[in-house]
Image 1 (tube, one colour):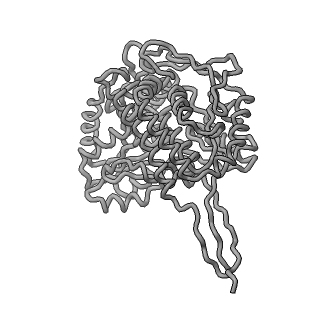
Image 2 (cartoon, one colour):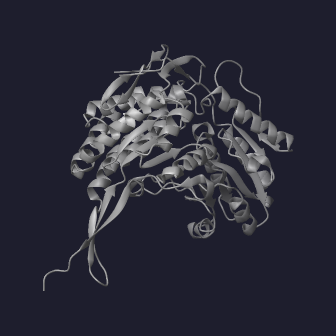
Image 3 (cartoon, rainbow, N blue to C red):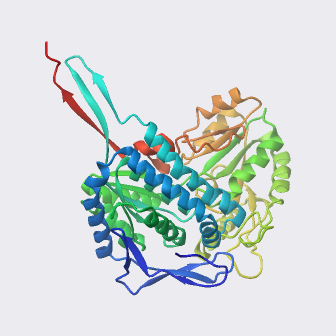
Length: 486
């Protein structure tokens, strides 16, 4: 059983294939760094195409037996895994806090508590799901059944690693699919701990497989292999386009959860203080490393100066520090590359004439991939109004009226999240219906883990969570019935 301490380096030499820990064939190791200290915290093997093929073969062999098990049997396995995740909360939270940079207390509640709930909830959803029904037609009737799509390749990101793994493999497995997981090589330790939990749950061999490695090797095999019936991918829009392109050659189903540039629209009638505070919080969660983060705050031009002052005051409450420090509300970014990318965007904004409301490109002294929370006033056509930054950077854009606000909100290639703040929920909903995005918070309405999550436009296709997430992994089959004897 693996655990992650605060000081030592853990070597993970194996993949999990066909119900066993399999020693990696390649001697190439991928480093995993503590984002707060930059120290090496773990190594994982770089998987090969041959190992990925072996995992796919195991999943294909296991599929028929697993898919034919009663739903209750599959759901009971999910309940075991949910209990195992809860029991390993400390190990998982420590791993994610060090890998990703989210403060430990928040990592326990969000990065581990959320997945533990989803494992149990998908079991409940499957038990209540209508797996078949009779449909009458003009010439007869059919028994319409829902069946597992087959072998699923799951490629997951580093920002909410355990959550994104869970939202793919839990509904896939309870639907009757078998899976091959390629976790992010930047934050893979939590996935390996989860594999230990799944192993202890005693699933039949081949139902769940994990191959560590890089996207151009492991990920591309999953996307192209003829025995993979579906690929579920979460990551950048650029990488998602590549996955879809490769998968199209075998006409497999592809679900994509990609980038975002979500707008928080604050109307004239809104409670400005509550709206600004809520928007800053929705932007800064996980140091801004959230695809649905509200990274554009749209405010009436007449209240721009007031909004600036409120935003500056709100962001000053986000104490920046190491993820294991009790006082930290905002941790580091996941890697040096991500830190440098975000700093580059901040500098671009300043070069284009941004109004620096808070923060800037200066980094704290010492180790760690830290970026100070930054707020910039910009124009709708600026680079930072269009590009996903994926860091603790909020841009503020002024608008003259509601029509312009809606136009600015919709003026990106993305459509994942957003918010509308108004004097009444009815007024906010009226505007929210005009915004081309997958989910909109109404006057600070909290995230609902049972509601569908996914995007419009280049934010992807497909939905996660609850019954909507389960249905992504199912096919329809119509059994045409003979008329009853006269």
